[in-house]
Image (tube, rainbow, N blue to C red; front, side, top):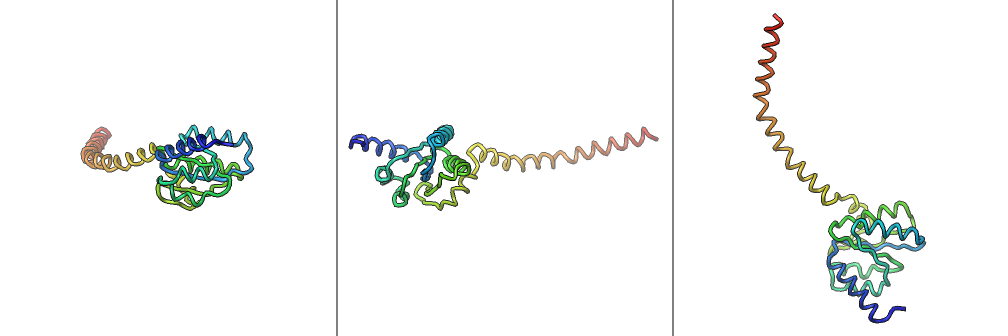
Length: 174
């Protein structure tokens, strides 16, 4: 049994974590073994995700007046909460990957700052590129026109060089 001070500390800790979060996911974990939960926690820790199993009443208080206030009414049953910090898709990636391996983990609520999403959106969110991948895609898109311009500008000189080489080869063969 938690004391009032311990409950206040849990609510304060969760509220501070949610203030820094980009996205949140709540999933039902009934039936998962301790080993499975340990694996889930380890993969979440690697991805920089804050995982917490807490009573729904405490979670509702922690989410009150935050950007994840929209989740409060959907919190029902035994849930594990995952908050993603820098990468909004990290939580969805970890939870959906783990749910594919363990059918006992069922995603119930997905939220992106002030917006409640459907459970199906978790899969789409998980497929979003990471920040580094997105920067790489952007750089490739930005670099392509410059490369094409350089090739286009160099082509007349290259064509002249090929023509002169063909004339030289023709004269040497004759």
